[in-house]
Length: 166
Image 1: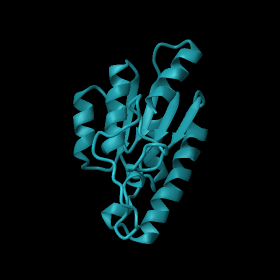
Image 2 (image 1 turned 90 degrees about the horizontal axis):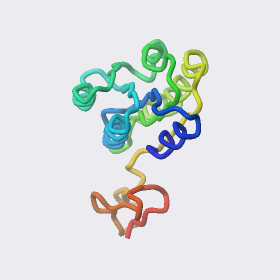
Image 3 (image 1 turned 45 degrees about the vertical axis):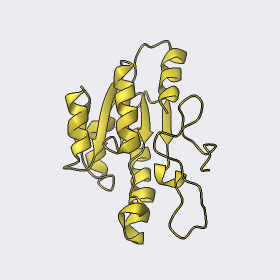
């Protein structure tokens, strides 16, 4: 995802972008946020109150916004005026989230982020939606035998649908 933002900045002739990262305190979100900050972009990190990962990002220079994807008003200050959104915030099945909460957060929460971008980010050029990294590891009882060891990635460092699990 960092390539999306870096490529966008170069294409627009702008040296840096203001990027909202939802789920910024999570595993992928924190790595993306740190990379964007290191490249000189402005990061607006959004996540649940009490997320220790967000506090660490604030120490690195990110603006941090606490809230809930299910509360549209919580998104407004974080998304106002951004150039791009990388939406990683989600409820994870690996955290024993009930089905109704999983659907609410992942479906209605994503709708809320899209709606907030439409209303409050007139300069937005990109909206990147991602799945969680849980899709790269076999679920218990799935019959899959391969696992991607921590740090396993493609030749260029990316982990995506083509990254092997064997």
